[in-house]
Length: 86
Image (cartoon, rainbow, N blue to C red; front, side, top):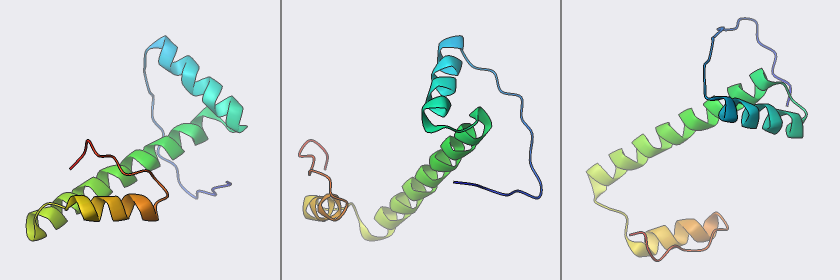
């Protein structure tokens, strides 16, 4: 994926050496820069956080998801239902 950005927000990031090495290796496996890899990871994290918030709001308004609803969602996503989660 190529992302063209007119503006960028620069960060200085510190992390444990083993995590940094894992990030560098993951970026290399994908054939991308560490900056791009971290940008995509941050975007994924934000999407997941927003989805979690939306699901919490939904449940606050309509009650908890039933096991049937969770199983249907898993099926539509091509995932095996998880009987340990309700």
